[in-house]
Image 1: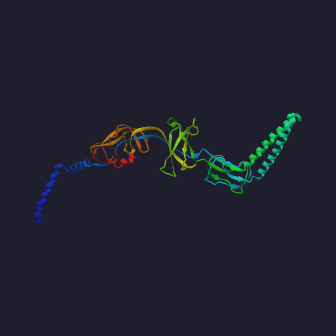
Image 2: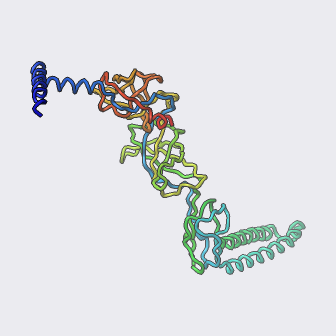
Amino acid sequence: MKATTPIIAALALTGTALLAGCGVGEASIADKESIQAATPVPVEVVQPARADIYATYAATATITSDADAPVVARVAGEVVELLVEEGDYVVAGQVLARLDGERLRLEMLAAQANLKRARTEFERNADLSRRGLISASMFDNLQYELDALEATYELKKLSYDYSKIRAPIAGIVASREVKPGQHLNANDVAFRITDTSELIAYLQIPQTELTKFSVGHTVNIEVASMPGVRFPATIERIGPTIDTRNGTFRATAMIDNAAGNLAPGMFGRFTIAYEQHKNALVVPAEALLDEDGESTVYIVTDGEAALRTVLTGIESEGKVEILSGLSESDIIVVVGHSGLRNGSKVLASNTVQDRFAG
C-alpha cells in the first residue's frame, strides 16, 4: 500500500494541472455540444409522390328517401287478409292487403245489371228511331240514361277494386299500420313504402362557399354504423336561392344505394370534392412546419438536415399539395423534426413510405 502512494499523488497533481489550464466548466460544455452535434438524430423520411388531390368541404345531414309513400285505404272495410310484411319488396300495383268487399261487389253487380237492361232497351229502340217511330227526344233520353248507368257501373267496379289495397310505388314495406280484423275508414294509412335504391340528402352550405360548388361534384359519405366505409354520391341540384334564416343554400346529394347498405334516417358526414388537381406533387401533412408564417420542411442530403421553404396548395385526407420548393427526388423528414436544425446529422429510415404511398 505504501508503494502506490507516490503514483496516486503524481496522478492527482497531473489532473489538477490540466484542469487549471483549461477550466472545468468550459471543457464540459464544449464536449457536450460536440457530442450532440456529432450524434445523428433518428428520423423517418419519405419522398414526395404524384397523386390526384381534391379540395373538399365537409357537411352533415340526415339521409332520407325521395320516394316515400303512405299507402291509404280508398274505401272503408275490415282487413281480411295481409299479404306482405315489413321489409318485403313490392312492385307498383301489387296487392298488399284485402278488405271485406262483399257489399261493394254486390253493388257493382247491381249496377252491371242495370247497365245491361238499359243497353238492351237502347238497342231495341235504336231501330225504331231510325224508322222514325219514336221521337228524337225520347231516344236521346235513352242515350243519356245509358251513359249515366255506364258511369255508375264503372264507379262501383272501381270501389270494389279499391277493397284491394295496392302499392302506389315500388320499394320496401317500411311499416305496417294495420292488423287482421281491424276496421279501416277511407284515407286511413295501412302501410308505408320506401324506395331505398336511391337515397337523398339535403346539405346546407354557407353562402360564402357558393362559388365552389356545382352540379355533378362528387361526394363521399360516412355513417356511424360503418366507420371507415365510404359511399359515393353526386350533387344533383343546387338551390337557386339563399335561406335568409341561416344564410345557407341547399345542395341536393343523390346516393346510389342499390346494394342496400344505407337506410333512410341515418346521419351521415358528407365530404364534397369541389376542386381536383390531377397528378399533383403531394407530401404527408405531418412533414410541414410553420416557420414565421411560412410552410417549411426538412430535407435530408448526405445524412444532414436542411430547412426548406415550400409553397402549398390543397390539403386533403392527410396529404398536402406542394406547388413549389420540392421535387420527387427530395427526401423529407416526417417524424423527428422537432429536434432538428440546419446542419443536424440524421439517421434516416423510410418506415412510413409504404403507408404514404398507399
